[in-house]
Length: 64
Image 1 (tube, rainbow, N blue to C red):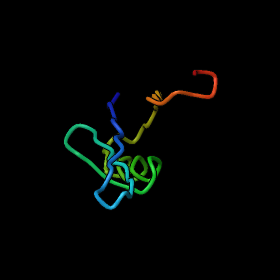
Image 2: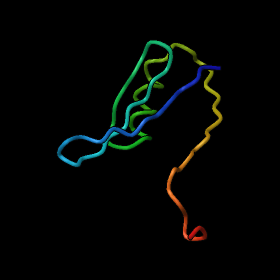
Image 3: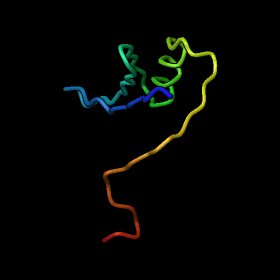
């Protein structure tokens, strides 16, 4: 299974984009999904199975 990392990128203009990285390939997109789709198209594996872990580093409405 190939490990994919999706990172938020904050630009000096305040605009946010996302960068997806796997092995020696990378892609960018305006959303995490766009970056992942572009990266998936570059990968050579025809069978794609995934496990998504989403980690948010901000507090939710239950945490004060």
